[in-house]
Length: 350
Ligand code: 1CP
Image (cartoon, rainbow, N blue to C red; front, side, top):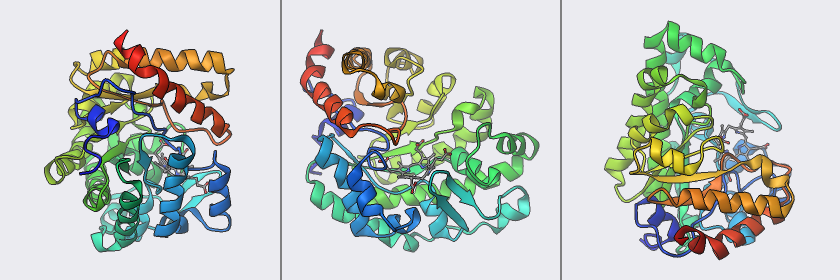
């Protein structure tokens, strides 16, 4: 494929180049960009995700503006659930809201399956994008079962995921059935993107850091592993990135679930993440997004520190430790890309 030799795919597959470290930002497409707010004006989030031309435009905006080394498909982790027919909305300023939260076996059994045919708009958008991106890789993504389940069980965003964790502990069979269904939906969403031309995929388990390792291993890892294994089988050339926030205690289990690249938030230095995962995985991360507002010399030194730390892993993809905050000055992101491109080869070699 035209992106097999890109710095991102090489770093993700244990073939990091001597050249600049690849860089992209989680949530690089979105509210930090005025051109994003302009094209989104008057269109709901879910409707925007269903319009291939709009999806392609929004996905390309940060590539044009910042010169990042990868595009991330503009969509949302809830899009496949909505496509399956689950009644949900993405509320501005809040996030996903579920009309009828799922809290018992009957509700789990009543959940629809996702017909791959309902994702035609995804295939169309990814196809258009891979054509326009040329050798710049497109990263496809999906939500992992725990993070998706947290929205379905809580009914919307939550801080402590209390109902989700209580269901997992008290009703392990209901929980497992829910996660099996969600894993099938996410796998279909990811496989659709990979089949249409995504060069890499990222499984977002954003909120799984709230779990103890024993619960992760017993109640979550097998379901995420099923998704990653399906992609590995059906799309062996497509590297898999596995990411969550606050997952310092889970990194080795998340790697073992079937990732090629382990996404790390800002709490664990990349060298330590490499050590915790046994040294065999590429790492992605992990500048603290809170520092994007710091004076440039301070921020630049933190960027350099991340690059030096990442040199201890067999591959490094530079990113933030979580998404770009909406109030970020986009010029700062461009400047980080320039710095990573200008200095990373030398910093890694030092
Ligand atoms: O550049 C990109 O990364 C854009 C594509 C993208 C991705 C990868 C969006 C657009 N959402 C996501 C994934 C996503 N969605 C995650 C995993 C990534 C992460 O941890 O940040 C999660 C947890 C969601 C759920 C979600 N959707 C939230 C978080 C709510 C919470 O619990 O705090 C929110 C705010 C949304 C809506 C959303 N998704 C994307 C955008 C641009 C928006 C805002 C839309 C709007 O306000 O109209």
